[in-house]
Structure formats: C-alpha cells, structure tokens
Image 1 (cartoon, rainbow, N blue to C red):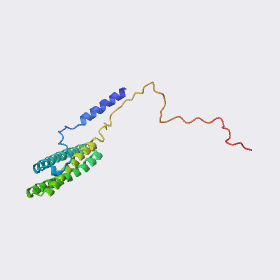
Image 2 (image 1 turned 90 degrees about the vertical axis):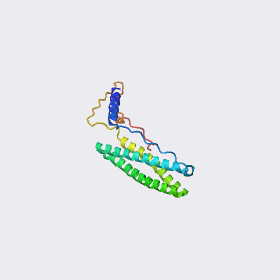
Image 3 (image 1 turned 45 degrees about the vertical axis):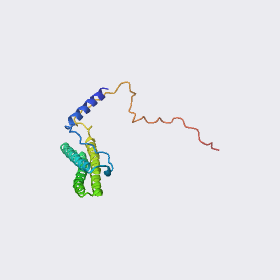
Image 4 (image 1 turned 30 degrees about the horizontal axis):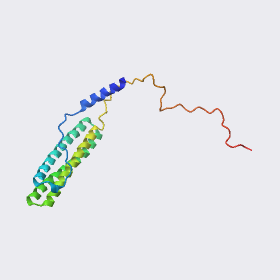
Length: 184
C-alpha cells in the first residue's frame, strides 16, 4: 500500500511540474452546415473566426514543438512536427480560400462563395482534430519519470510464495501407466 501511495505522489509531482502554463483553448470548430443556410455576412465573420482559431492552434503547436525540442524527445518532436506541417498546409489553404470567398461575395458568385466557405470550415475542423492529436503526441510519455527515481516495493506477507510467472516443473511420473492395448 505504501508503494502505491509513493508512486501516486511521484507521478503527480512529475506531472504537475511538467505542465506548461495553459492558455484558453481557441473556439472549437462548429459542426459543418449547409453553406446556403449561412448569410454572406456570417460567412465572412465565421471564416475570419476560423482563421483566427487556426492561427492560435498554430502558435500552440509551435510551443509544443519547442517543448519537445527542449526535452530532447525525438519521438514527440517527430510526432508534433508532422502535425505542424499539416496545420501549416491547412492554414495556407484556408487563407487562400478566405480571400477567394471575399472576392466571390463581391462578384455575387453564390456557388463559388459557398465552395470557398466550405473549404475554410472543413480545414477548421481538421485543424481542431490535429490540435487534439498534438496533445496526444506530447502526452504519450507523460508518465515517464526521472532515471534517478528510487521506488521501494514492500511485498505483503499474506501473499502465497513463489513467482506465478515461473511455475515449478511438473513432477516425474513414477508409476508406469498400463498399456493402451494388450499384447498377444
């Protein structure tokens, strides 16, 4: 029991000290709706909000990348770097789609504006998903502890003896079984 308490304290202290200062999460991506049901002014506003949220995610992912670099953790670094590349690409596509959306609205091209609006909203959803994946990348080894950690294990006395993973060898057969068929 003492071991479990000690382990819980060690893990909790390790996790608390490793936590970066948290910023409020950017707005989650809304459910995708029909672009025709959204007014032109709302399309512009939502597109702008989506770009802002995606830029915030980009800043967070860059911070996680720096955290992985400081920790010199290659696994985390590769995982975050892969997600960062995807976020950058989606943000670039979204920025181009936002400009095209504004142009389409000025020209009153309904189909084009709906298409560009949909691109931005889908990219926002994907970036939100990538943000969660980055958190998983960083959290993969959250329970790793210091190499100098000493853990003391006390075995309760009421446990049966022996290692259950190494059973004793079977006993030798001392009595010969009768023959399977009689010999004539």
